[in-house]
Image 1 (cartoon, one colour):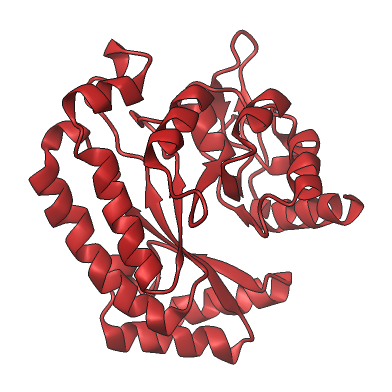
Image 2: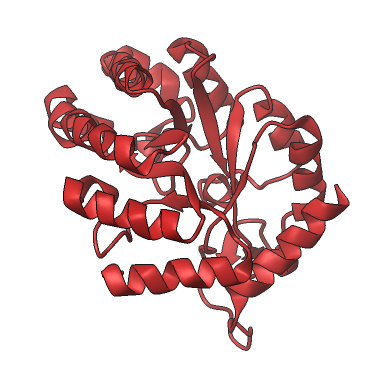
Length: 278
């Protein structure tokens, strides 16, 4: 979104009753990492004028094949992070988001953390280094699971990663429910239970599976999702693990005959009703 479109989008959020934002790849026509300080100040002013606030800057940093090596990760992710943290002083989020790295060999193993610890021992210390930078800048760190060939495809890998990572007092797991489903783990109460002690930020989307498999197939509104949205989110709210729930657009192919008009409004209304009942 260009600046004018960004302002219109903010007005739309106000109209929907949304007051807390996650900023990522559509801020005044740019991703967060590409903003200049002047553009960040302008975006911050547009947000403040409407009484809105920023909860998280979703950078996408570290979402790259680990096989590319430490030097490339430092160049592509750690160095730009320093610029984002300067912007964060203006945009004032509570969290700065990183993403799980990916691997070109995802199909070759089921234990990504053992693979990383054996062949790429620099990766987890690099996450710690990034989290240290974020902490010194005055923000919390969230690491989300991501899609595709993510190192996080199952709860066990996520638990093992955070066990090795440490620093639980200032780093939380950002559970994107549908992204983990896309990586092979169907969402449900047992998945939440396994991850509960790590979650500090929760992202939700709709999504439907087909008639013969629980794999994600179609995109949909939250109210029509195949995963048990109400059951999982009631537990998330009851346990207080995620101060806000981040609503994102669904992944999946368009389903023939499905009505996609007004999905964002429908999702917000559904989520607001659900949370009011918790």
